[in-house]
Image (cartoon, rainbow, N blue to C red; front, side, top):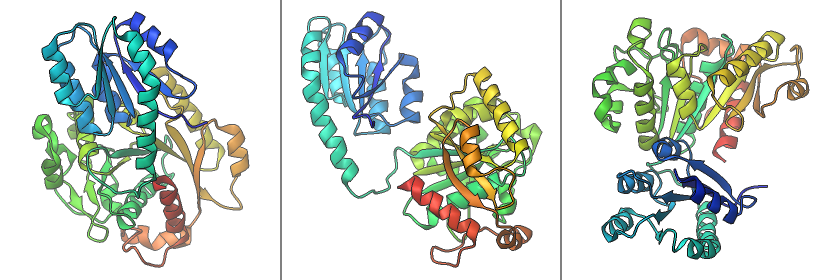
Length: 383
């Protein structure tokens, strides 16, 4: 059953947190509890309907409220103060909080009023969801494409997916090649440039959209923005997890969709990208060897503490009558939902791959079977 509201509780007070969890309806709402230091990461990763901030000894509560509102102005912020300092309360309200209550005196008042607050905000959220979708900056989506096995068509799927979004919507889209050692997107997209993602390293602390667009390449047909890999393992080593985190969070604020083409190996950089992504699409070939690699990948992520459940879906590529495993077989063998299946289209893709041409060039054009399947998948994601 779909939850009514996605509520984030920010608290370092265990006793107060337990009181809230006992009072709030966890059957009706999706409730997550985090500590103060995780606020920026969590609001970046996922849009929240409501954030309940419980005051701690930290002195940056106003900055947190402003940050939450900058990411999503529609998030309903409630501040539970542990003292009645009028200056703090005034500053928090000016920063964008909708309500405040002073603990412990007003805890029962908050609990009694919360159902009404929830109902009113729920009506507002549903009303906004029913309106026509428009694309605006401030809260983009990050989609990662990954496969532990080479040769699955991951990069081709990621690039065509990004092109399809750009061609068939008004969205601002950026495609990022995170395979620092070998790259590959520049060949698929027929791009020649001496600029790469590594050129953003000197400005990473003050990174903004202008910096990114000065380095990215614009694909001439779809006008898709692309950040190219340096294709140099030595250069790639200086781009650490902090660099990737800042880059992706800036892209999230500057673009509607950020598409990541991830390398097959797992290191600190790719692990950071996996954690920043809203959704991960694992490209799987319908064969035993590809299935075994998927199992190894699951085990590795479990050891590294990377949570895949709920965030990862599988794309089955190169589906044909003669394939070793069928979709119904894979549904029984893997524990992740299957996002889509893509037909084997060697004849249709051969000329594009040999010439190094992008698969999509215009919104209205004759599509090969591969491109038709990607468009169907894209429409399902956007829908």
